[in-house]
Picture (cartoon, rainbow, N blue to C red):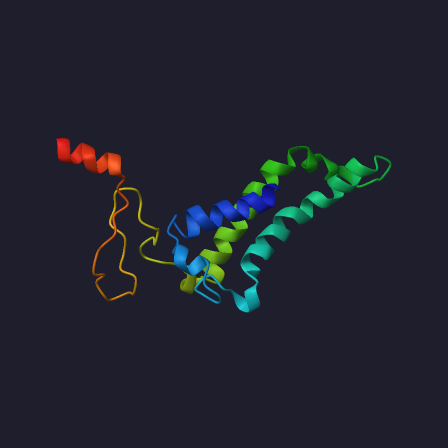
Length: 144
């Protein structure tokens, strides 16, 4: 689980800088659609973080296996896998193959409570802008 978490954390916090376009997350073949639907960068960082842990994992299943000193790294597998995957994913996405299409300048999140909703069709103003303000909030504003 460490290599998987490392890849996810690195991608969201370091590569995309916590900026996602939620509309595109649910769009078929949107900006988060990678080569044939597979993000090879994520798979590479996961495998490189996971592969060194395999001998220790095998020894944990069958203690009679002789894997040399490779089993020692498995004692801190989560931490090792996490940081190895973070490092590998960061290097791949920053220096080797930058995923430019999936990087957005501004986060595209849905409106929060109290904010005005965006237009139904981009570029057009909606006739009656909907607000996500509850009736109790409206009453409190009117009373103030």
